[in-house]
Length: 171
Ligand SMILES: [Zn+2]
Figure 1: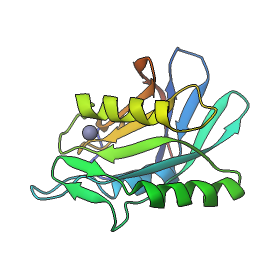
Figure 2: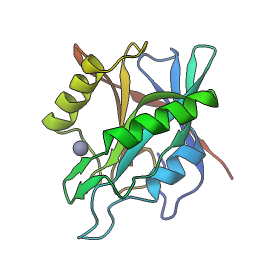
Figure 3: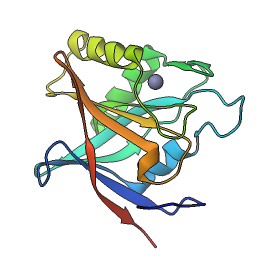
């Protein structure tokens, strides 16, 4: 288990079943999300979208977008500007990057999804047009290392938590 005082660049390999297809959060994507950890008492929630390439059976998340000034952010809430997000999706698509889900921060060490997190994402899955089996939800807590990252798959039937199969620390 990693217990890191400072952020070492790392990638996380997330799976639904051991040895199965993985969702990989690259160090680039993680470092963007880590920048918005809610470390101070007044820090607001932040969030963005996850963009990936499909490599074999795996989904490699190369980019996590940063929040925009049009998002609604509070201590315990994050409502992205969906119009702006749709533009991001079209732009990335031209570069072969596919929207696969969202990320946001929580002001807690070990993050867990709220009921609203799950219903919002499930509604979003149901109401938007896509070919995905599920959306990925990533929540970033205040603790560094893999314990501070929560990830799950969400679709119309509900939520399946992902487990971290491997942490790849980049020296
Ligand atoms: Zn949340």
